[in-house]
Length: 188
Image (cartoon, rainbow, N blue to C red; front, side, top):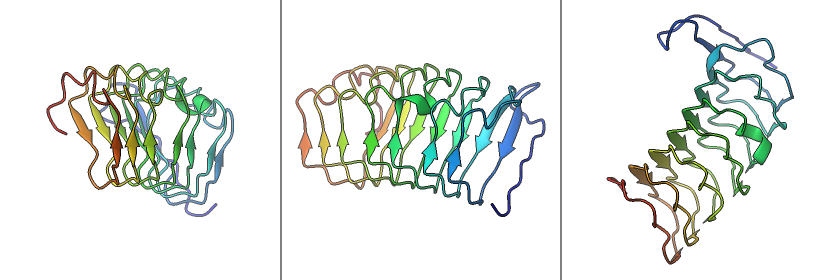
């Protein structure tokens, strides 16, 4: 790995919160317990690496994590054990990766997540079991994917969602009741 910097310092996030920054490196995999010993880390930036795999429960020691940035990597799949243990996570940004699959219920456990940004990936279908656990979500950014289809009831539990960005996709099919549950949406 080259140009690795780990900066841990107090921020304005609140007393005792810290930021970790490991960007522009060659990290391909995050192994279990890689971040063990950083229980107060609140903000983690892993942008512009070569990340392909976040192994099962690799981030689970980061119970205080609120912001996670994984832009410009090579992640292909969001798996159930990647993020489900991050119950305090508020913002997850995984822009410009190669994500084509969001496994069923892979984002369950993210009870505090208010913003999910998956801009610039390779998603083709929004399945009805991909996002329904994200009951606190207020912003969902799916711009510039390859989305062709939104299955019925895909957003049924996203009653707090205010912003849904589907711009620059290839929508061909919007299933019946696809937008059911989006009673708070102000910007589509």
